[in-house]
Length: 355
Ligand code: AMP
Picture 1 (cartoon, rainbow, N blue to C red):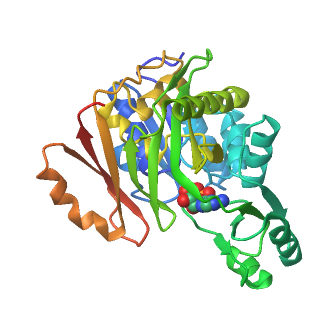
Picture 2: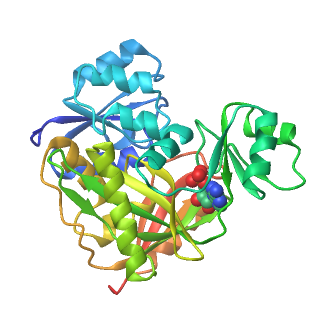
């Protein structure tokens, strides 16, 4: 167990690291952030920071020497950097989990192996394989890069008119995956925490609305029949157990028109669709991560309110003042100086009476 006063290392400097560092500070821990850029949102609120590329082995060694345990706050940290830290200090979730979830093909193969339903998919190695897979799956279908894709980056919709070589180039011309297009009723996610002792604490499934492939709104809890919600929780628990996760996991799922669940993506870290837990639950997803990786008991996931969370994306952030005039709204800004289209700048959580 790492007692309060110890130092938690966080690989990655974004808003998820920032909110983790804030939760850690509240429990009396110090944090040390490893970020690639100066003035990273997480580094602004951490006790210490190492600013260097993830490929800088000497900087990674200095970081590892300065922390007691470590975690990561986004998927695209090179596996080698995480393994270098893990050779010296406990890293949770374990690096193998990161490596599964940063590769869409490995992730879906893992889900298939453990009997969790996903949309049908095929590995795509070149434009001919794409044409063949599109024939098998039918169109529309979604072509995605296997690695380094998020928020819709590296995704191409394949229709009857699509030219395979053009789509392949547009996707990035690397290893891809073609997925059957899901004409879903809604998208949901389940965020949970799992401790080293195997204890699991699950938040209620929430409904997620995306705009331009980026999460725009989370409605907590999801307004769906109890059987679907119970199944979603059971699927998420099963995945966390089979991964032997210690930390926080988000499971994104499609709910089909017939009420079936198809898992789309896993994130072994706090998730945008769990931000509402900061203001509406006894224990936030960030505090759960701190508790899990330090070996403390997990907290209660009980919610004292329902919530609607809206991301402030790009220039939306200019509307931040409106939130301050609303007595039910909580404003969160991430300290990012430069506004870019599609960049997550902050979020607003509005609390509603508990259903
Ligand atoms: P992802 O990067 O896989 O999380 O995809 C981002 C968003 O694109 C998802 O949340 C969905 O809204 C949409 N999307 C991704 N894959 C599919 C699919 N196979 N069928 C329908 N919509 C999808």
